[in-house]
Length: 188
Image (cartoon, rainbow, N blue to C red; front, top):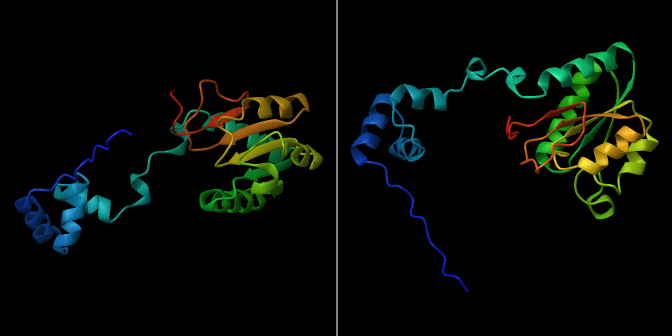
């Protein structure tokens, strides 16, 4: 059995912690956490503590975002059936809810499907494809899954169904052959 190498947490400089606490008027424990996360500059620490949506980068900077937008707009314009396929964990359920509500607000003909873990396994799997195809969508949008579903997306494409992958997990060596793959962990 291999010995475990423990990585000791970096102990922030007490003077830096005290200075942050004074400058930001926060408790020492908060200043210690900030310094431990590398937020030792007061302006950077303040921005971290009081986030603003204006600080976010444009999501259109993500590879595949423009293709996803164009395909979704076409589906809405042409009244194509869109199926949002979400993972069943908390970010998948939340993301699916947001996607469905937003698409409905935009006038899309949208439905959703979440796999049953004990029946279908994880993510966009071959076991769940009959259920997906049975819904007769023109477009499938994955939420929080699909980045490694190369064969499954190819199977949907063979059925005439376009796919947009939205995920945040690490891609495999090959991206799925979707009309758009939006994942911040893409190499490009």
